Image (cartoon, rainbow, N blue to C red; front, side):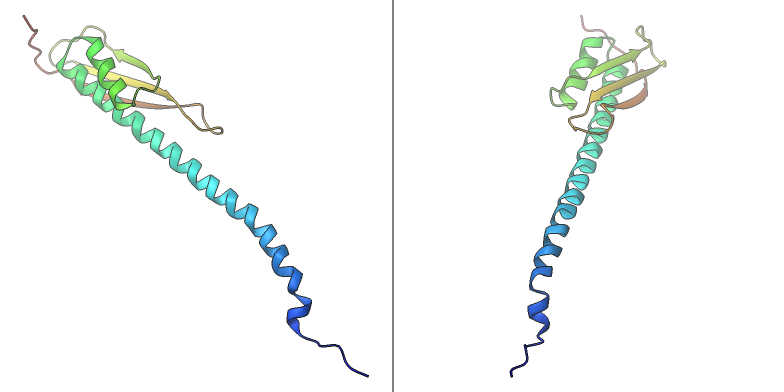
Length: 127
């Protein structure tokens, strides 16, 4: 009478497949969460840079179109809401630019906001 082989490989052959099947979705969820976080962080940086560029443009120009152009260039043409205050600026005033940008992510906050403040410099109007 022969004894069955008590090899550990025989008993655990299916458990490796099961462990892989359970670990794979968890791995993909971790990767997706990481990519989502990176995308959100990118949007935060983009909106803050856009607000800073807009504040700089507002500090050297009285024209709001110049500010909007600077913000649009910084957000790569994405639709952004821009708030500039005060509307009438004179040398030495503080100008505040707020940029609200919709995120491209399926979950999380729908928008990110960036704000920057700059002191208005001496503005020489073009002839």
